[in-house]
Structures are given as C-alpha cells and as structure tokens.
Image 1 (cartoon, helix red, strand yellow):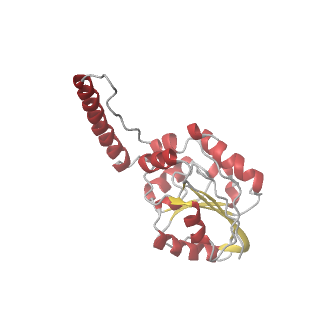
Image 2: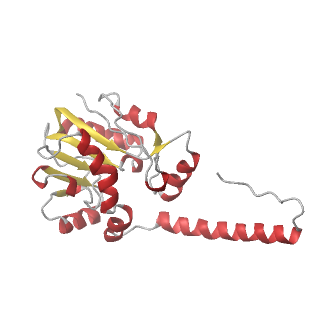
Image 3: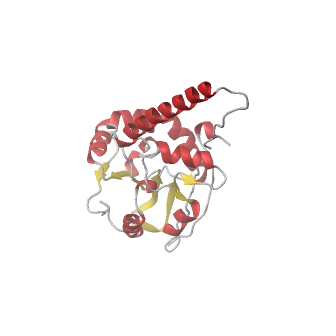
Length: 232
C-alpha cells in the first residue's frame, strides 16, 4: 500500500554582572528576573493544564486564517480533494472541515465534547467519536486520511494501533497526508517554544515520524516550513 506523507514542519541567554555595575542593581535585576520567571512558569502551567472549551479552542488554537494559510493552500496544490473520500483523523472541533466536500467527509476524534461542538457548528459535515481505538468506517473506503497536528498528542504504542486502522480503512492506492510540528537541530528556540506552549507531549524529530509510517507506507516529504513569526 502506498501513501505519500506530507510533512509540514514547523536560548536562554545568561545574564552576567557587567563590569562596573553595582551589586544593588545586579541584585534588583536578578531578583526581578527570578520573580518574573516564577510568574511565567505559573502562567504556562495554568495554560498547559487547562482544558480549552471547544469555542475558545476554535478561535485561539485553530483560527480559520491559519488553517487557510498553513493547511488548505498547501495541500490543495498537491492533492485533489474535492471529489475524494476523506477521513479527518483528530478533527477536534471540525475547524479543518471547510477545506473538504461535506458529501465525502468524515471527521473523527476521541474527545466527545469537541465532536458534539463540531456537529452543532458544521451540521453539513459528519463527525463521530473514536471508541476503543477503532475507526467508525468500513474497509477500503477512504481516498485520503488527513492528520493535521494530531500525532504529537499520541504515544508511539497507541499510534501504531491506529496505523492498523488506517491500513484497514484506506483504499489500496490511498494516501495519508500528515502535517505535524517537528523538532529541529537547527532551530533550538523553535523547539523550546513548541515544547513550552503546545500541550502535545510527543513532538518528534522528522525521522521519528517517518519511522512510524515507513513499515506500511512509502513516504514523500512535500514541504517543510516554520509558521507565524518563525517564517522562513
């Protein structure tokens, strides 16, 4: 079975005491930095531990302009999706659904609250909850399986179970399109930023993502990029 894999990629500076600076000033600077660091840590902890309700998630994490720029405009150049049967794996609130033809679309997620939100917000589309790591679809049904910023929330052992399901529901010549944040040896600040602000616990290097797929699928890297203020 063949399935091109589209991989869309997404210092701490020490402060030494300057020559001639007074100990009082240094103490004030370092003390302020420590207090600021504690406050930032608390804010980040609350940010990463809270559950965004579906409405806020839709507006903050998956705004439409971002989806159009970093997903829609890219994949539509590479793949014919209008008349293709598409499984949107990890669809969340359904924010990606507008890219696809509702007649041929199924969005799935393990989060029932977000699936309920998606069904209410996009009634012309179909959304269902994943139960027991089993996709609610028949064999050899989909032309495309789209996975957008989802794998980095799933550990390897669980995702390998989903890979078996992908192999079951995709057509013999079907394709899996993947867009995921990727750790980079060259961009240490980007790595820090993603690990700090993204609640996904399993952001991987490119080779690690490839290893997940390469036993069953032929992999093609279509594009690498950095997004928002990390544009390249």
